[in-house]
Length: 350
Ligand code: SAH
Image (cartoon, rainbow, N blue to C red; front, side, top):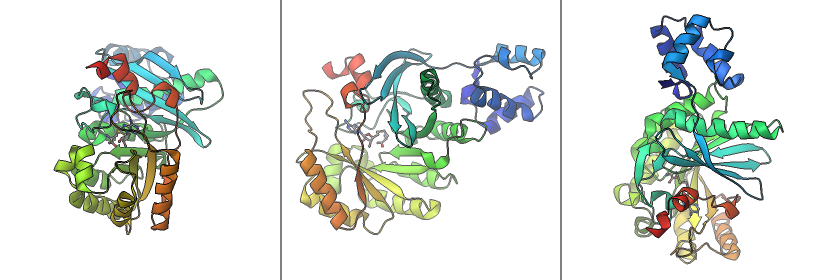
């Protein structure tokens, strides 16, 4: 069975041609599933009965199932979704005053093994298929529809579990599907991919000709500290990563966001701020400071106090680097990466 939610428009057009259909059939199907939100082929009344039977036989419109749903006091919704093979992934709905953003997972588990992140505890189990990423957005859209306030997903960040550039092709298909005018029509500038710094992926992404955004999880301004926090830095140290990011900026003309998790006493010092300023100054990028979400009671890292976060922000600003503090959502519901899944599977006890 081919899941229609995983078909990028060119692929679907090819498939329809191979079924002896006219080219417009692909757009017609997109319109049914994304605009009219049909959930069965029977609803597609302008498709001949005969071809509907073919569709039913070979194609499906399957969405992941909601395994667990947590709703935060601030309205944030975190879902643990169950996939066809029983594996589970998380996605989160965040409500901003400018729209509804979904944080999408790109893999089941993650191989990057960053020392502060729960997603990597059990390693990567598998890549997500495009339909499983589209499915995360659609399930959230369905919940928004049920709320009846006329809201729908307007922004997507690929910042859930997984390393998107370790699942490059599927993530690109996913982006093309949600960005397509007749797909979910989510504007490219409202789509952000976050990477821990896989250079090949960054350079390939630069050449996609998309107007989507890139975020780099930096978290440390020198190799020694970054090696300790992020294993990936041993393969792609800062002297390789930073030129790649500059090349990305030149090719794409887009500004990069540097994510910088603040860990008390570890990377929130004056020395780190000065090093960070030197690293970023002269690029178009800006820094998003992320308050660390402590993952369990034995956590070896602690979030920097509000005072230290603001002091760090001040140092960056005075040093000529644009920086903001990330708004926090759902801290009462395990909303940071991999926490809900890790908890449900007892990973912290292992
Ligand atoms: N692999 C990609 C995307 C997934 S992680 C990447 O590394 O960018 C998304 C972001 O959440 C990363 O910046 C990651 O470092 C951060 N993160 C991981 N654990 C966190 C925690 N406990 N609290 C806050 N942010 C966390």
